[in-house]
Amino acid sequence: MSEQTCTEYVLVSAPNRAGKEFINLLRTKGIQYYAITNNNYGKKRLEAMGVDRIIMVNTEDVTSWTPPEIRISKVYLFEVSFNLCCRYIQICKDWNPKSIHVITKRGNARVTYRALGADHFTYINNNQEASLLLLP
Image (cartoon, rainbow, N blue to C red; front, side, top):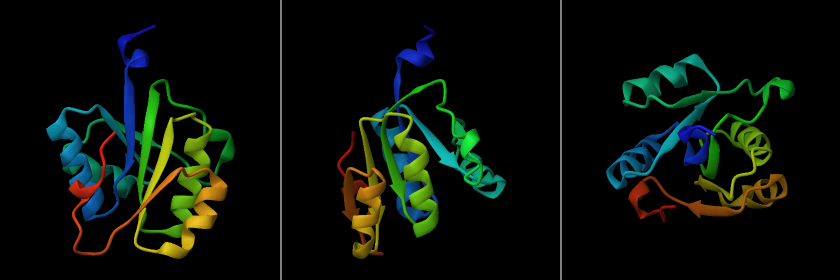
């Protein structure tokens, strides 16, 4: 097994300011991570932030949701779209992470997210910093 497959990584969907701050916090703490996105705009945005480990997924093609060749320990999904967050949960749960954590501004989505496989929820408002989250 290569070193990359033995290491466990945090997976982050970071489409908003809180997600960006969380990635910066992971860097500061020296935690290994990958980012996930489903489009070229998101990929370019992540690359502009200095993210070089990016998993691109086609959220419309279930047959393409094969697990990456890395071990995902925990997933942190920063919600900007209810539908996209639901799809990411569906994709990531089959990758067998230890937990899926959704960071959201809406409290009424919890039941749906839990039914899809999310384990933890953090509710934030516009003024909260991502650094308030518990790290892996």
